[in-house]
Length: 193
Image (cartoon, rainbow, N blue to C red; front, top):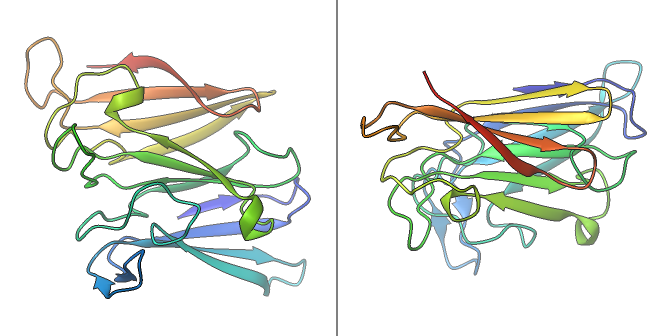
């Protein structure tokens, strides 16, 4: 579960990951088991949901397609990493994502910018081994855990990679850091035990 306060124009919000949700295939030719989804609710001062949206990899804003067992929505956070300053961004992981050319269950982190805006204006960032400067590892599980923090105008995202090989030690695990000053995430340091 991810939550955000009312300081942005789009009100207080809660994101709830539903990683075991079955979703429609992107071409709508059937259902994809355990593809996963995220449900967002925005609240009024009275505490009742004022608006709701559901996001899954079957949505046109997402790169790739839902696959059986991706578990999209495993970890979620709400923040402001890119897009418009007044609108919330959704940071969501799919640790069992298979990425072409990288391996099985390598995982990834996706950011949807401006999720309270119209569907056609939502943009995305998709982070995986191919663009975070790490050697790919089968069952790396990028995004198995997730954290978001703010310090002034700098935003930080930490994505756990429990299956990462470190200094020749298989499955030693690591945490990949990302930073943002409002123009989207940028890969930063790698932290290991």
